[in-house]
Length: 142
Length: 430
Image 1: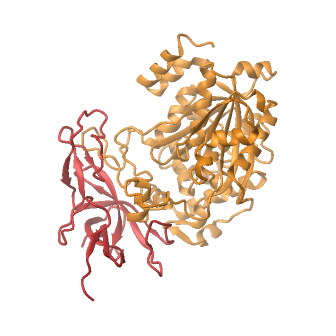
Image 2: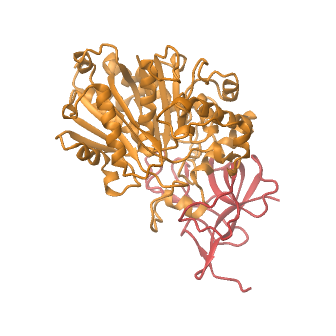
């Protein structure tokens, strides 16, 4: 099987660096508030008047705040494989950013638990004629 | 009007200060009467949402002894799944009742839409702009998961969370359920007991869709949807409608009703930054990196968004959780009902399972929760649900909740939350 074209399923939310992928967020230069996804109109901190936020790479590692395994195919626009396979979604706490970021969980779910360390990977969301559509996911850190 | 100063001054106070100042600004005059309530039974009836709305509205008008021609203001709750007529639900239902020239509004706050409509009607009555308002919410829902608006909507977080994560609503409910298991040692049996309680409560409610006892085993043996939640832990989506006739206390008195059930507080509050709990439909929480004590996931001592919702309604009403006799809370999942016990102040964090197991929140207990049967027995009809909660508490406070009556109920509270940052809580007193 040949390597297929990787297509980021959303533009500008993560890097496609195979070894060390990163989520792309925003950071307020005045108060230090982080934002993900990188779509804020101004600093979301109501105490801060800043309107220009800087692009920043978020931490690659975090700890699981909570998670679930979904056993039913979601409705569109999710592109569910046929046959459907259960998949996990985790809410992951990033220590430096002091925020929680969601992501599907890649790879085996062994070791997935509240408090478990995870790291960011880029993984397949679905495939079609255009190529391999990829998105960020969390993976239990070895 | 009994308030001091022009109304602009009162609303200015409410904007600048905490919700407590609103109670101060309005004083005891900040109440309106619930003169009539009505519902269309919940189910999957396959009809147009406006048909249900008309049935509920007529029932509420009959209950109030008020004619449609006397209604001066219509406050509709919007439904987003029924095309343009749903976006303008207030006027759609007004037209179906026969145009009467009333002023109209339609509100949308997701699951908080009904409370938002109540709040608009209350404000107009308290401002002296009308005496009689009809509040109505109705929905026709599709089967299965609630889904985002169709099309390629790459700038809509609600669309993107399905596309990029497959993050259904039960995904978020499951996050909260697992937190309870992790922090407080809650078990799937505890969650199942919520369903067992609510199923029993709803047996005698003619408006409920599901009227059948459920056992712990049946919940635990039902298919897992979003681990640790089973199919019977998660509420269905339903068709249904609910309506209220709200009036000034003076109008109620003129109709010979000196002691009506009163709306004493309505909180459709937004979160405070940083909102540290992951809420639908977000990909992330706010960041607490700007300082302060708040850490991701919440900090002891700091009010979470859900804690702040009923708090704001209590402050307006001048009551506290210790005064509450009965509550209707949003059991989108069984585990979420347990969260609400703590969020509305019935117990401290981590004590909800004990409250449930001790029977405190069961009919006959100290503070019955969801005597209507809750969403477990109704399924969710989004713009109608918060209004239905008020219908139930009105029946409870009147002493007319046949087969499910809470003894000597004088103060009731509703609580729910709509996605995109909408709190929803109503305090009713008698």
